[in-house]
Length: 463
Image (cartoon, rainbow, N blue to C red; front, top):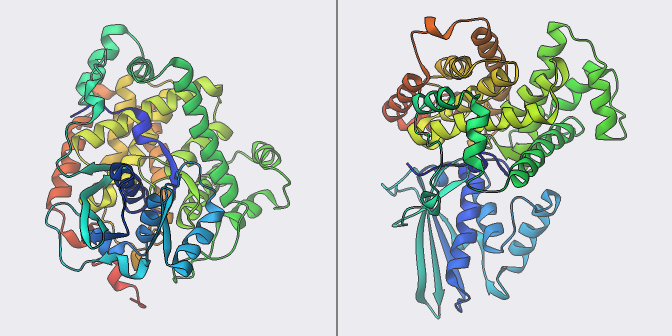
């Protein structure tokens, strides 16, 4: 496969789903750019398969409208989204570049019951002028915010010739042995082919700060999540329970209070869960988060990172950089060798991959060898194999939010096991577990692949 940057895995965007929200958003933006200013007076969007079945719960219809208007998911003010969507619906008009055209979301966005037979996340854009077709394009949202246009030529990233090409873990280990450097150094040298040293560091800093901000917002907001299930936000209550107060005037004051909190096992365990839940409550409420590698799994890595930041021997931004470089490359290998899309592989492709990424990153900054890093990632994924994606009501809430908490705890446990073990005694290796995850994904019943047609989604009493 083509080279993948860690910044293809870590993207700043808006929830609740990378494949159902961020991907369609980016597809809509690309479609409008391909119009190249052509005069149009009508645009229709067809949604198929998983996008059709769970698109309303995942805000797919909102995402394509925001994308058509040219809003950037990284920089848009999430608090303005409802206002923008409300305006489009009320006025029955949408801004396409400098032009306003008639647009009724209830009519021009079509949720199809029949499958596309091309990809589980298929969307088709059609633009017209005077009832004549001007342009039609089909896109596939392939997980983690990645999109692929039907018939698209090889991505431009193929033009990059990396000094240390990595397809599988065996390649990565070979490179670490050749230059006698940790995994993060190998990945950093590859990243320098895409952007400058300062740009890599600045981007990691922005991603880390966005993660902390999403945790703080989640721990500062109460109420109920949208969508009709009336899921009560819990992170603020957990934070208050652990700190004894919730009247913090700034993020810095809140962070200082956590630093001063007890370091016993029960307290740390609760904080890890609190961090993960906070991010995913923000994600479920159209908040800004970082795909890691997806929106649905966006709470795992922040939770493990903050576990390291608050409760381990923190090594500063240098350690944070090494964490992201290592965990990002693990995500890249799963993307290449299997999938990071729940619509293709179930929740093992989201929470499982994020847990493996977090376990590997934590092991690196805790002083683990490259072999121990991959051992930790393998352990974390091994114990997520077969996990289904069965969101109740098509919402990224139940069981998704709590699964992030469990994925974070598993990542820490996997790292501890790897750091206290000898990789030479391992019977199962990273490349084996990647293949096993892909085999499982292919054989998993479609009901358990983000369709809300199986598992908890159909056994919940109100469904």
